[in-house]
Image 1 (cartoon, one colour):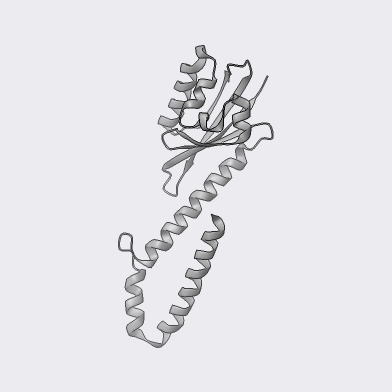
Image 2 (image 1 turned 180 degrees about the horizontal axis):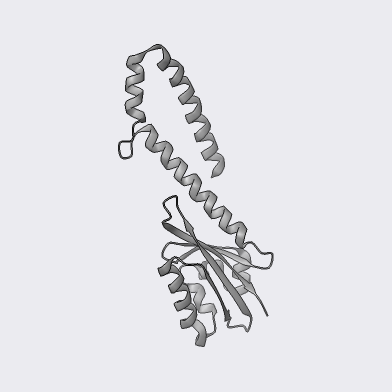
Length: 171
């Protein structure tokens, strides 16, 4: 996806350069282009560039958080702002002994021992509701104790857009 954004940015930069050269020679054209560069709620060139910039910042924040949580023996996940998993790594699936598809949404919680499922749900729910980082241990049904960690991913306005995290066997 980043390679597409790079091409878009290169195209917009080239277009802006051409427009700049044209504008220097014709004030009428410059006035019309300035109108399109003025933010108008979504459709101007400036609004489009700002949206691309926000998307890049979001991707960078997600990548930074994933790198911070990267550990060799850990399984990784991405969740939306409501805490529903939408991607898990193969290692995550392997650790919880469930198919990747069976880990989506909140289904991964069923991997915890039944006596601990409500505590896992409550710990994760607290993190989601408060936009706080989470770190807690629980036992899986097959007897492995794991450390669960997550951090919220924030946009440029410090609004939560999701979570990244991992799960790592500790026993």
